[in-house]
Image 1 (spheres, helix red, strand yellow):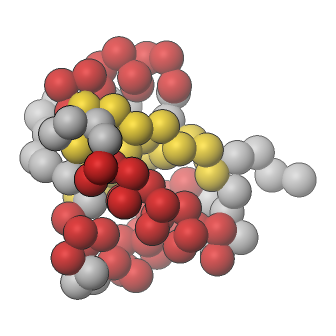
Image 2: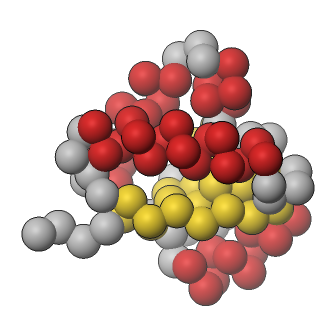
Length: 96
């Protein structure tokens, strides 16, 4: 059995928006046969979460600066519904 892939979802407050994004992303990845473990945080907390959670990818609902050592994807598509499938597919290809 493949190991679960770790995805960090970051938003302004680390609560409602990241929860909505995380659930949509989880469903999309699991539909593609990818088991995931999600963690959520505020964008301002990303550095410490990346160090402790060691994600395979990050999804952020706002622009982020810096190199986190893993791909960072925009989470806006999960909020608007526009292009969501394409973003899920890109993430799936990245974390396989």
